[in-house]
Length: 111
Length: 114
Image (cartoon, rainbow over all chains, first blue to last red; front, side, top):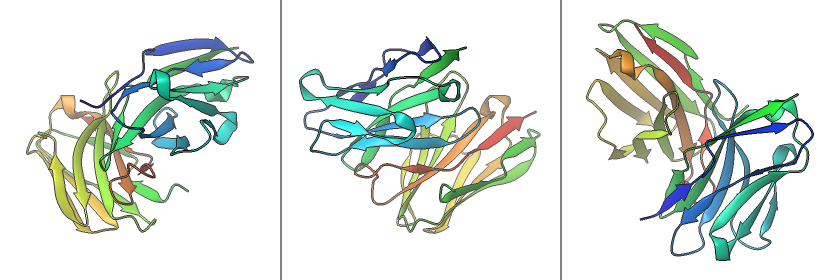
């Protein structure tokens, strides 16, 4: 069955440090891939998406993600984290007309 | 401006009350969704409407009753809720199933059942 796994439930990084959030999916073909961010008490905002072509995708707020077919992964990265990046991050996979969401990773940023 | 507006933002209701949550999208999408998000739990898909017809109901208790009068509006009618129904309720919309372009979410309604 198709699934999305975010292995890290909670991550803490220092402000200014680099960030990588992991996402793995299980699907027979190349899916559509998304990353969303949710600030406390808010809805989900789309950060970036991958359909095809260049496997390195740029998004809003300085985020990027890389699709690696061989690893079935779509990890989210940011070179230098800001305190305002503290939030919950969701990876999602689109297939057969649906989005399947991972369980989310909570990012805490230390001053 | 996300294009999906949810009202109210916060709602406190007793277990015997009846209330409704409203969602409106201004994006011309043809599918709308209700999600429940409880603390420390993953997103739970509750209902899916496509072209104003309910196409998915994920074993949601009957005390939650959705209504989609047109492609721009979605309601969630609530009655005789339980304290465990306290959560953030999110509405989303998409063009088609959303697998190509993703969903656009509203800011949610924070529901507290007392």
